Amino acid sequence: MMVGKEDLGLSLSLNFPATAERNPSSVQLNLMPSMVSSASPFNLLHGTPNWSDSCPSSSDRNIADAFKVETRSFLKGIDVNRIPPTAAEVEEEAGVSSPNSTISSISGKRSERDLPVNEHDGERDSSRGISDDEDGDNSRKKLRLSKDQSAVLEESFKEHNTLNPKQKLALAKRLGLRPRQVEVWFQNRRARTKLKQTEVDCEFLKRCCENLTEENRRLQKELQELRALKLSPQFYMQMAPPTTLTMCPSCERVAAPPSSAMEKPTDHQHNRAHLTGVNQNHHRTLPFNPWSTPATQVVHRQMNALHPRS
DNA sequence: GTGCCGATTGATGTTACATCA
DNA sequence: GCTGATGTAACATCAATCGGC
Image (tube, rainbow, N blue to C red; front, side, top):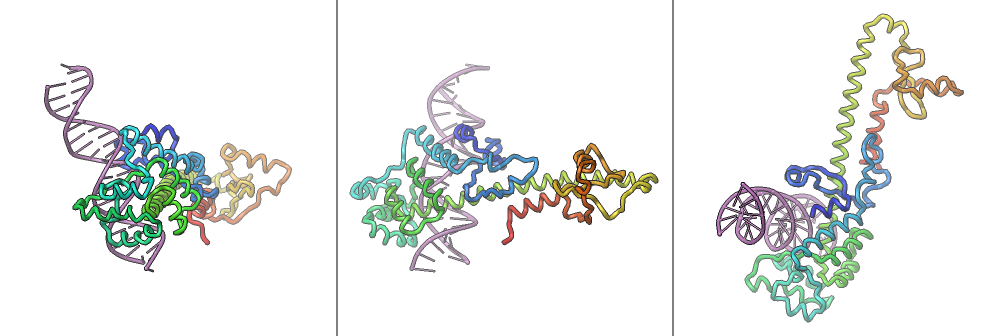
């Protein structure tokens, strides 16, 4: 339900074509806290929202997902997923395509994998869904996990996004699911998390690109202005040595030397304050490296944050 | 042999739209 | 022409499967 998503304040919209058509603000993104560190590139992106702030917490997302599932079930008035309370009851339903008896039956490989676990669990009955094939019903039934099951799984996923066999068994037992189902849920959950992370990265790079384009445009314009100035004889009279620029060590911004005609007081007003202030050595002359301009430094920091070198 | 991953399938739910009484 | 019920195609979601590593 869109209402649920919006009300929960889920943030990032990517407007993928198919979705955007109907739901312009769709594709709600979420990051697991562990996946968005404090060094997240989004925090470094100037002029953009703080994504880690605006992105929902995983719990919000979990709630949203659970809410979604719940709402669907509620609206239909049907909860298709019941936790089989006892093995006996499961046995009764085994041939009847109960949601929880949905199987892996089609794949012999996986069924075989599950079998020992069920034996071990004393819940072999659920694996009798294999007999669905024998019943001639080859269509696999779609299982929808209940709200409670999803919530527990999400909780567990928050603690550790992979399960060891022991944890898997315990969780399966607790939820009344087969271990294979728990395993599959975790796999799919990891895939979803990764997909969302990819989408976020994509969005970030898009913004990065936009910023660079804008910066490039600005620099081109500046270059044109400088070239125009260059034609003026007065420019040469007052020009600073061509290979040096002054960088403010505190803010890392490049500024023209005070005597230079290039100085633009309105552009970087605090330079004047620095230069006329107590510390006359505040500005030091540095060799100009075009790749270490503020803009490129910001981008480099962003890129490093995104893909840190080991 | 096992577990994970990416790609894919298929069941199910939602939505927008058309048709009809 | 307007309204509500019904059918349906398109799409979204997600559990489950498959093959590869």
